[in-house]
Image 1 (tube, rainbow, N blue to C red):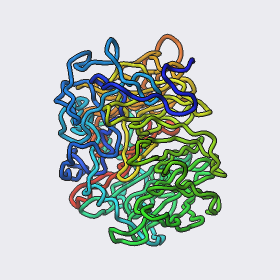
Image 2: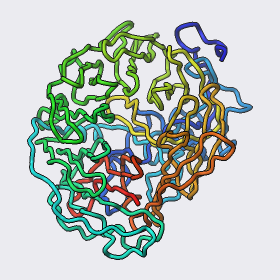
Image 3: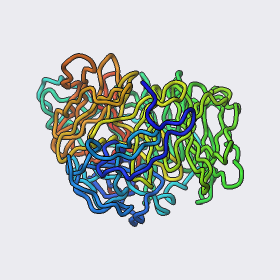
Image 4: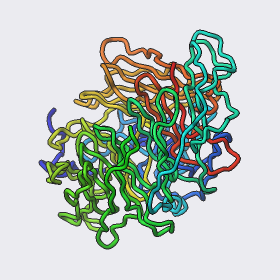
Length: 598
């Protein structure tokens, strides 16, 4: 593809100029990843109440959409005009250049609950769907400074015998109860819920479920869910628990920490290991600097260590853990340190460089990417993205963004798809970079996109998005649901144009999960009276109609629909869903994790 107009060689991507039109269609959405900081949902799940509303000034998280609704003047005072989807798109309208000197295609809305322009939900009973992400305030940050000091192994396990399974085609009965539900603490206690009672022929079963452990009244984090071919592992408050993927019986003893787990690697190594971080004390000033390697299949603990302190103002109150091959990158607030995940030995530091460039976020997986904030409070203030050699820290390439553009997410690492925002222009941009960091394309589709994205309090969460997938040539993004079914749009990464789109098979949001075997795997969310679905969509050919792989039972729809924030996974024909935030309500029968299958 030829270089876009006005692009300078080898550096920034053209200065944004005029205000873009209203009506964005690509900013990520945060319907559930609020960690207990928003509107309550299903009372069975005991979601925590919302904190005080933040000011209208946008926080450090990415602007969130539903951008296709009539709006009030935006947070920067620009009135919004009607047009397609009730808001004008980029076609036939003057455009502001994006971070690469190309037209910008987005116009975010306020980023907090109840803000002007907040769209309605997807049609589900879940009131948090379809709403913009929550802004971050001091009350939010305060909830994340709970931690731990050391860990201890405690006994755990469910002793209840499995209940006989029943054919999908048989009429379900009371004996169709999920196997070994337990209560989340490993004692195998009885639970009154039979989530399969009334299950309809052809529907999948809840194979097993676990109740959440006790948590403080203010709530607690439950970050991370990892599935191997043997074990489903979940972090929750002060412990790490593991269950057999088939029957839900504990596969190893619960690993208990005296204080709350504060960070985990969302990825796992090739040999199924993760790293967990926990606090070095229980006060609000405790640092998240204690590391522990865990084998997911056995529960065995490997090396442990302490994250080195950074320079002045380079805090470890919160850290970010990411894996790239056998490299563990630990991100502080203004730098990072890489370790060999096999033995815990330090590999390199990623520190301040160049024009006061402070590395503030990292993304790992098939490659290691760093994002830095440069030249703060100067005329040269801008962001830079770099690819690093994961073993040496050597910079492979650097790409500078123009002033005003902030890198917020990576929708994919290979290929590298970057979501950035411009608060001054109230605009967003989704672009693809090639293997050398050069501009390849940007999204040119007039649509309201709404991937399910998490967010970070003190740092940018580059890999916090679910509900978005990519293969070598295509990006798959979900549209905003406007009271019913949404669509998934396939976008050509070579030119940013639409290839095809497919409508959700139900009146609920469909979210891409991943591409495998030439098919897009997607999750169709539940409603209060219908279970969710897993579907596959052919990525090639003339037909892209979804094929149902799994229909979750209607009898468990209320629980499935009630997770305030969640992790989801489709592995080996089973669907897993777990909470990422515990409410701490003593009377709530809060579910920690459910597994579905045939």
